[in-house]
Image 1 (tube, rainbow, N blue to C red):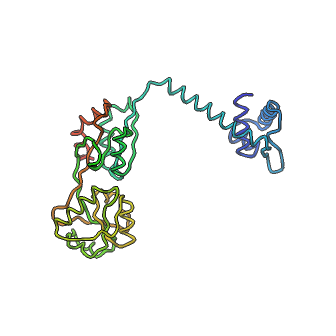
Image 2: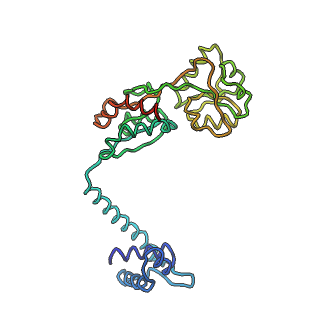
Image 3: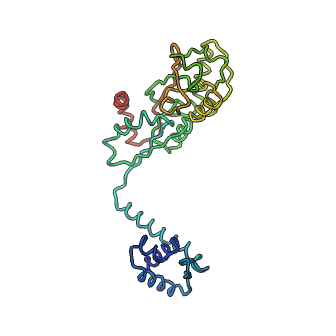
Length: 297
C-alpha cells in the first residue's frame, strides 16, 4: 500500500464520484483511478466502495477505513512540515498585543520600529481588553502591549499618549446640535460607562464627574467599546468613552468633545520586567522613534 492509494481513496470518498475525483481533485484518468482503488481494496482484503447509479458509496469497511486514512495523511503532512521547519534557521517570535481599536493607530508605527528585525523574527499580533493584555504580559504570552496602565499587575509602563474622553450619543440625539458637550448636559440622560474589565475608564469617569460637581447614576456598565456603542444606539443613552471610539462608530452613533479640559486616559507600552528578550530591549529603546512615527501616521 502506498500513500497515493490513501489519497485517491479519500478523494473518491469525499466527492462520491470516481469521475469527479479523477478530473477535479487528482488530475488523472478515471480508468487509472479505478485501478488504484481496486489495488487498495485487494491489499486491504475487503471492498471499500460500492458502485451504484448515484455514483460510489462507502461500504461499512470503507467508512471505518476513511478516518484512519485521513489521519495517516495528516500525520504524513505534519511530518513533512516539521522536517521543513527543522531545516530552516530558527526564527525568534515577538508577540505584540493591542487594546482593541488601538491597533489602527499603533500597529504601523510598531512594525516600522521593528523593520530591521523582521528578517529574523516572527511577529504575532493580537487584540484584547486591557486587563487581559496585562495578564498575558505577566504570564509571558505577550512581549509588549499597547494598553491602559493596569495597577493590579507589576509591569513596566511607558506612557505614549493621553487620550481624552468624548461623549457618544445617537446620531439624532438633541446634543448633536452642540459643537461640544458640558458635563451638566449629561444630567438626566441614560448614562453608560465603564465597569468590570474597564476599571480604569470607570475610575477616570467617576473622578471627572465628581470634580464637575454632578452626581450621575450609572444606568449601564460595559467593559468593551462594542457593547457601549450598542447600548448607546438601543437605549438612546450617552456614554463617556476614549477618543479612539471615533475610529469604530457605526452610522447610528456619533461623538462630540467635552467642553473645557476633558479627562484623559493614558495609553502605555507595557511589558514584563522579567522579560529578557533582546528584541523587546531594542523595541523599548526606540520608543522615541515610535512616537515620531505615530505623529506622522
